[in-house]
Image (cartoon, rainbow over all chains, first blue to last red; front, side):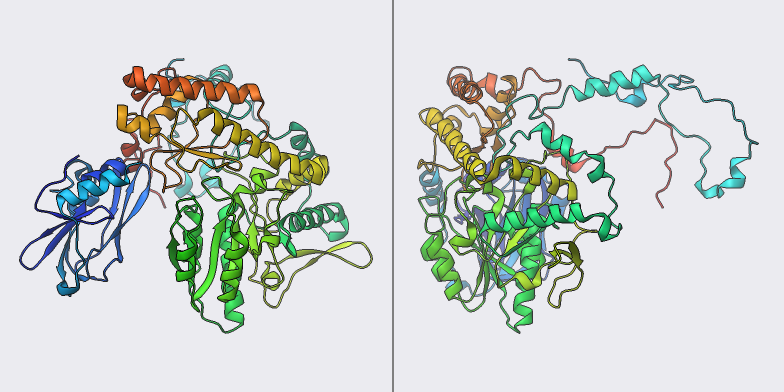
Length: 129
Length: 492
């Protein structure tokens, strides 16, 4: 199970890469393993405004449909449109070419505390029955 | 068994299955009879003898799995055996040859039957009235939410939020959203029941309804259902019962007595209509006093003279939701079932369904993880998480391996809140011998997962095709045969 250092994680299995003014968001290796082969990804359009914890998209696999949750409020700068043709990227390269959206975060001061790689690994261990 | 080619691939030019007699009327050119746009020069139909065709389809039919062939423990689907006598009754010419436009004087028996079935369903539900119009369970859900919306609209009230536990069938939030409601999910607590604190916190003057499945999809009875309904009513909302699991409580407990305002039945699950083949089905609903004015039209009524008639107009009715009056012959089977069993028999259905599920639970408990190990109702949810973390064997692998043992796999990966879920619903119609054979297979597979995990991961080994590329099946679905080089007719 890959959990790269340097990224932040949510309890709903998204990862966040923080750059100077923008955040890149995707789903974790654990999430894609649980989902199985992804067949469809629905993402917001560039310019869409997201509320914190709002559903910003859905991932459909052969097994289930899952919502994607915005870890922070912000404006969508870009969605990864290549996923519409190449959903396999979510399974094969969840932290790279399988990224989902880039956002310009708003209200960073009130942003919740995310999990570090080590904390996320611990969280997965605890929630594994 | 070997691969069966497509019927097109078996075609031999010039071969036919029938000899058409010589034409004994003057022939006319087809172009004089039909517009040219509807004519094609070549019609690429397969050319085969009658025997070729019979063998082709008979061979394919042998690859079906059906309740008539074996155990079918598909959880949440109630794949029970439906008596053949009810099929014979539903095929009586006096019932099948009715026309829905016939004068009511000529169809009094059919109207009486609908009236009796709706009356019995209302009684089983513990509610005021019922309709057999909805075509399926999700249609019954949709109708229920339409009626709830109509109720608030006619009272000039704005209530927009529908609460739904996270263990619910996905059709619940879909039906609510389709009616314009905002859906809020409620968590399940450590007992596998609706989280009461989250329910209390979620209720407000915005609450339109709670959609609750009882027993829920974990196969557990919502033991606090009285308090749940009280709380929702206190907040001014209504409570809908998803009756998908009615087989567990039919004749034993009535949703109306629990406080529900509306519920749906799947007549094709609980009341003796074979299903799984795409219909027709019936998602009858029953309603209490609050929602009765919004029932769809037309409705059957019994006049003071003792004869039956249609009521076609209702001031508050949500309108018609099915052509004519729904799937009448499904109601016929339900009537046959109700009359055969009576209320005593119905109770025994529920009791045996619950007993059978608990027998399976008890036999498998030491071999598989049971996340909510309390006594269950009509179905039991296992998790294969033990097998997965130890040997990498998933629920899907165990299901595929069950096919080698001759069983239809249980439902996989539902409810969503249980990792590696297998949902087993044996139903009341199975013998102890069948249940034992299934449990023996499950235990043998748990053993194989330890000693030879690859055997399980690569199953099935006995079927014509093994693991299919499910992603390609979704992404590149192509169900149309086309001869190479054929011109493609444009769709108009």
